Length: 172
Image (tube, rainbow, N blue to C red):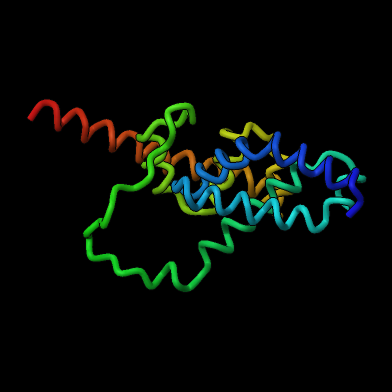
C-alpha cells in the first residue's frame, strides 16, 4: 500500500472508529465484542482500501463489512455451545455514560431478532436512508422496511413489558 493510501486509511479509521463501535454495540450488546468487530472490520477494509477509497465515500461499505462481521460472529458454532446454567461469573460490561444508550433500550434490542435488529439499528440509530440500509443488508428496500417495522414492533413490546414490570415492581 502506498504511504498516501496508508495515511488516508489511518485518518478514516481514527475518525470512524467510535461511530462504528457504537453501531457494533447496538448490534451485539457487548462492548468487548463491539471492539473486536470494529477491529476485524477495519482489518478487512484495510486490505481493499486503495481500491474502495478511489471509488468515493466508503462509509456504507464499512458498515456493510461491520454488519457481515457481526452476522458471521453470531453463526459461529461455539456461541451455541455455551453452558447456560444461569450463573454469571462476572458483571457484564455496561455502556459507557457518554454512549447515549439507555439500559432499557439495550435490553429491548437484545430481544429483537438479528436481521430485524440490524435494520432498526442502521435505519434509526445510524440514521441511514432505506436505500443505504438495503445495500448494507443486501436485500430490497421493501425488505428493509418490513424488517424495520417488525423490529420496531418487537422493540415496542419489549419496552412496554419492561415499563409494566418496573411499575408493578414499584407498587408491590
